[in-house]
Image 1 (tube, helix red, strand yellow):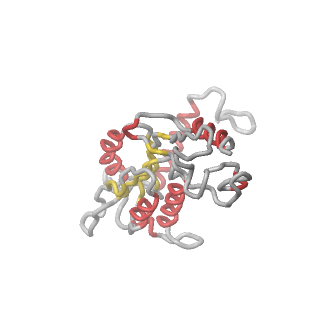
Image 2: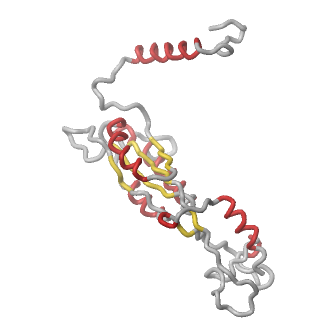
Image 3: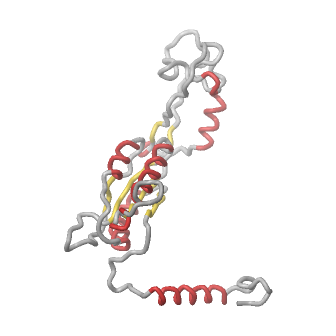
Length: 236
């Protein structure tokens, strides 16, 4: 009856890495749907996984079973840290409905829900605490890295209203010590719609920016020996 569960457990063990217990989490995905008889399919029927009943495997002292052992799978999930741009431009409408921010936030929330058992999501946003005299206040954390709680991730990130400038550099500098202290595997996702505009010392016209981009491209090409050839075979 329970032999069918062995391949699933082996696959899960192959995908998940063991770690110390100080930051480990029990891997407890939802039981598959469907139904089946006690001998023909168990809970889940055609899924190939017999969970033993509607609430999971039988208790350890259940009679009539051979080799009734429960081995919880634990993992130390990587932290996926979203850094959302909630500047004024993120309130612009997009085709299909919603705003730039609402579309990005919904996609992030869906990802967190889908990976709720394998990642530990956190979130920050910028700018925060803005007002008429300080539209470029640096951002900060709005949801600490938390395992298995996609609902509150969605609640924390979905309640923001885009406003103000884009203090990207100041926000990343403020977050750097916090992120460095988290330890373990960390993936930072910067979700923004454009360049920062809160540094008065960094500015250029459209023409200047295009020229600089072309110069950088030429310099990269000059360092290559086989690349940067035109379709006619001549070097650029």
